[in-house]
Length: 251
Ligand code: PEP
Image: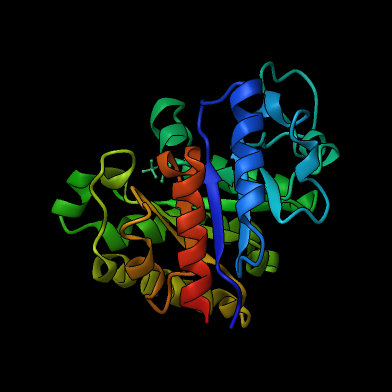
């Protein structure tokens, strides 16, 4: 069975001092953890967190990546630049970027392509809004979002990570029930299965108010291969409890 993957998304939080304390505390508690762990940090802190590169028990991730290689794209950070800082994962298509920065399915697919071209694993976020769920459109929406990424990256689709993040559950304290999440994960798994004979290799993470209290029941679902953790990744004890739950559900 593949190891679960627990990735923290710090979002736009942190400071040099706070990052140092958080990473030290997480690293100190990681000994013996039976899962893959990573933190996706704001780009300016990648250089501070070089201790997490190359073989660290806690791997380094970014929260976004440009679809472009280089040039006149003010404010953007390329996959090549991230690679120079030992970045192993890059979140693409987070709902906050889709919502506040107008990112389309096509752009998200190009961002995933750029990451893959530089050996960075894109964590491709998909998820429905509350209105879409209430209109019974969840399956249609997540399939459309993933289909765009498969369309552009079909040849190496088994190299991506998918994160199912219902928008209504992000940062709200409302979590999908394990059954609701598993239902969507099974849909995503079968979509990947149709695209690659290696679909079982792909980690499908759940994200949306996952915390120390609900992690174990979510991670026990057959198609939930880990978590993308926002708020709870900023508190070392909570993040470590989720990591411990991932190891336990792996046993
Ligand atoms: C996220 O931002 O990806 C996320 C899942 O946030 P939270 O855990 O805070 O809901």
